[in-house]
Amino acid sequence: MHLTDNQRGALYMTASMAGFAVEDVFVKAAAHTLPLGQVLLTIGLVGMLVFAAMAARQGEPLLPPAFLSRPMLIRCGFEITGRLFYGLAITLTALSTTSAILQATPLVVVAGAALVFGERVSPQRWLAVLVGFAGVLVILRPGSDFSTLSLLAVVGLLGFAGRDLATRAAPKGLSNRQLGALGFAMLAAAGAILLIVTGGARMPSGLDLAHLAGGVVFGMSGYHALTYAMRTGEVGAVTPFRYTRLIFAMVLAMVLFGERPDLATWIGAGLVVGSGLFALTRK
Picture 1 (cartoon, rainbow, N blue to C red):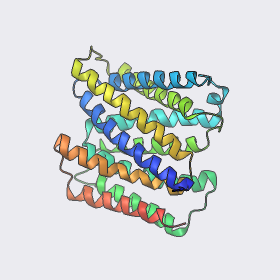
Picture 2 (cartoon, rainbow, N blue to C red):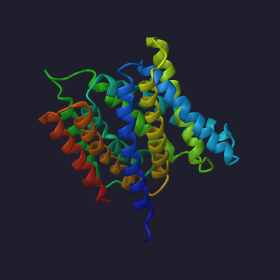
Picture 3 (spheres, helix red, strand yellow):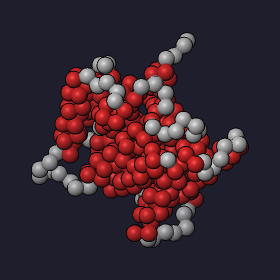
Picture 4 (cartoon, rainbow, N blue to C red):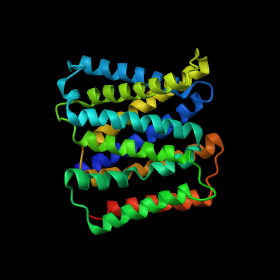
């Protein structure tokens, strides 16, 4: 069966979200006994080396001049921001809540695609963006139940949205392997920054190494699929499939960590996901 670019992009995005959801589980587990900075630094360095080896095997330069282009430098800045603050969010707050907030990323990308790339976004899609943002506010619940730690996830989602938009603008000559190596280098940079601030690095145990290995494998798989997704099909059609991450994350959080999202989280997540699905069906 022949698939369109949008359909292929949607499949890549769904696979990417599954990979990232499992990676989050391993990162959260590893951060129970290791400093988060050490976890991010280790996963980033290993992922960078593996992607670099894959690129070298294909005869691709490890430091192409395009890495210094403006879109790539902007991408790196957003990558570090997203990785750093989202890592803090999944470690310090409930995985289910953080994942629900992250689901606003596609709406930010849709809005950014219109503002940055000039993609046509109908009034219905703009309405969906506003409803989605309202859903985030329901999850954050400003007032007596508001936790400032929830803002870590908000900053993280802004970083990831900027990264995805910058990936779209990345020079076409760069391969997914080169982009993967750079992306994991930025994860390592985020981890190094955090580790310098917090300190406390220590020798990992056998279980810690297993958690780190799981984070590397699933993180690399998710990143590889994400890069394919953002370079295949229309941004506005592909990015709403990020919402599948919420399904994976909620199930994993409840089964593995015993989390029970409250009513406000479910309502907010429903608004965010519903608005995203609406945006997907509208031009």
